Length: 116
Image (cartoon, rainbow, N blue to C red; front, side, top):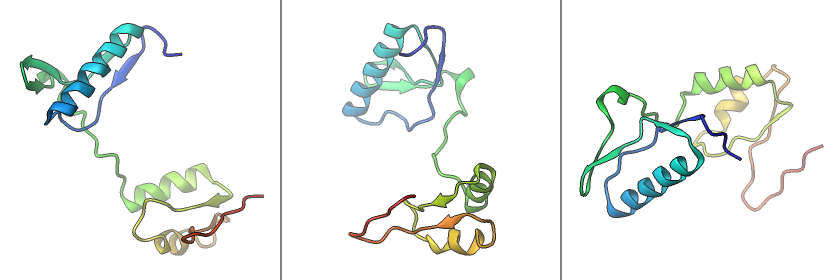
């Protein structure tokens, strides 16, 4: 259950179509319902035109980390097994994690991945 008084940091894309506007209105309604403050949320400044308040701009994140950033994260977490998905180059992880004690198991199309 969301906690009233929490903050929701919005770092997604801009509202650029009618479906996005409906999604944004829905998000505002849910945050209001649960008493959660939205930060970086676009607001409707006039019908069909959404803007992030000037004092809250700069919060956008693409959601993608660089290869070295991912390696830092992975080696910091130290999983026993890493299954690289959503990547065009799973071999990058095999090469760069060799000797770390982290087993890299790229998935095979139609195959199964079994964990101990």
